[in-house]
Image (cartoon, rainbow, N blue to C red):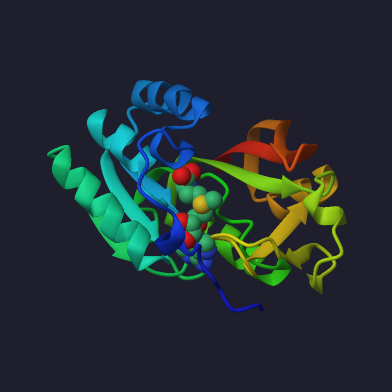
Length: 221
Ligand SMILES: C[S@@+](CC[C@H](N)C(=O)[O-])C[C@H]1O[C@@H](n2cnc3c(N)ncnc32)[C@H](O)[C@@H]1O
């Protein structure tokens, strides 16, 4: 299994307008969905700078902020203090979550669990299964093999995984890419409640690039 490597958040400046400080669109849906199902214990797995931890904290959830990057956890902690929110913080590796069996109601891991190889992916999925309560839910995203990045001539780790070689916070961080059949097999112990493949466009050096991500909502049975 490849060694875990988090994002280098030290090179990412604080900017309240950046995407990392503003909740993703689907997180508002998840707040409402999980409130209406009386979910309470929320794990922000790979919380980054804390945009979802803060949103769920403000909405009355008991929030566990978790990331392998100390810098990310420090910055999430500072932001929570500014907001007068009392959240729980831990630095660690998603391959071994520091939470009790069946202790969590709902998990958001947006653009996080892809940062490993195929063996690591299987281990993380076991960890999700272990910590979620029965009927607990997890919303996660996975890079798709249709993405531009998967087609790059970057170092291959295994048949599903490459090292990302662009300069920036995810330089040399492993990226696992999936397709629909692989997803069905990996998550066979869960009920897949929703699955979408979403295409994102972005411009760089006057070129248009596309990336595709699978968005999954899974339920523990
Ligand atoms: C793309 S960022 C997403 C941050 C956050 N989920 C968000 O949507 O704003 C990926 C995050 O996953 C964390 N990460 C990567 N590998 C990890 C691991 N093995 N264990 C825990 N966190 C990890 C990174 O440090 C980074 O903060």
